[in-house]
Image 1 (cartoon, rainbow, N blue to C red):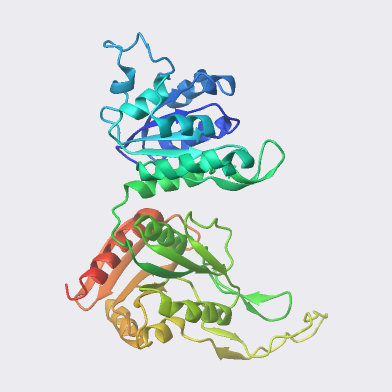
Image 2 (image 1 turned 30 degrees about the horizontal axis):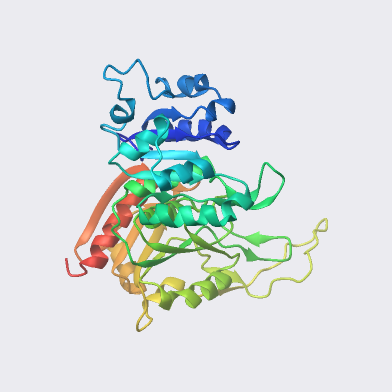
Length: 400
């Protein structure tokens, strides 16, 4: 998976304890396919050595405004030529103040001032420094100047205090950078997505569930938010981290998922039902753990149907534009179209359950009024991007 393939990024590192995260950030950017040039301030070198970044990137690290390795002595110009963006992480309060007032007394600040390409910064500082009136004035001015601030996050800080000011984690910064490059095909839209399995109780200990990992639904949520949508994710139990910028509601059972979705549906433009919702639930789950005794006949369970969430949302008079998912063991175009008609949705996405459960890749086919459209096989995030592109096109041009 190479979301940043072909992108060249200048990574600026300023002097704060969060520098240690910048090494991981560099590796993650490279793993995503980016070429990264590192520019450090002198104070950053007190926290982490240039040798670390050079070893990780395989490229020279730049510190000196008067770098003799540059033939024309213009490192502040040369480094951004052909680059796609400058990302400063961490960005200290001092460096943000320099940016605000156009001060250029070292390579990184001069490079930022002279650069015509987008500038993204990840603030990192003590909570009191972040809340200081001067810092907040600088934040307001940087926003007006078109600088994109990523964070900060809230949490435990190196000083022992807790609050706003932490640099975003490297994984989230890579997500934000990736999102920056994505076409904003869903800008201005609200998208509701379900993901993961549901767990239907037999007793307080045992449940009936399925093998859904939630990876496809979470990948679609990530792709949707990166396409500019405001995303709400209703998720069954998974071990996955919520994608950056996504609002998540956690549920356990199909009935809980139904309640959460119906409360949100009319407030969204698009509904994508990815979750593997149990068709049935135990009619009367035991309030006590069912005991296992030697020679005892296993308990008989009776079942009742769970609500059909997708069909119910699709039938709302002024509900969202709906997309259904079908995980099947065989892909039959006629059956897929029949299911789409039963659900009453304009688009159904089908995949082979045995090939995608717990995997990082998937194979999907789209079914609409025009027939079948294979999207092929690929990593779930890559396929999710293709799905979002198709959804955006159909929503914007429903008659196409």
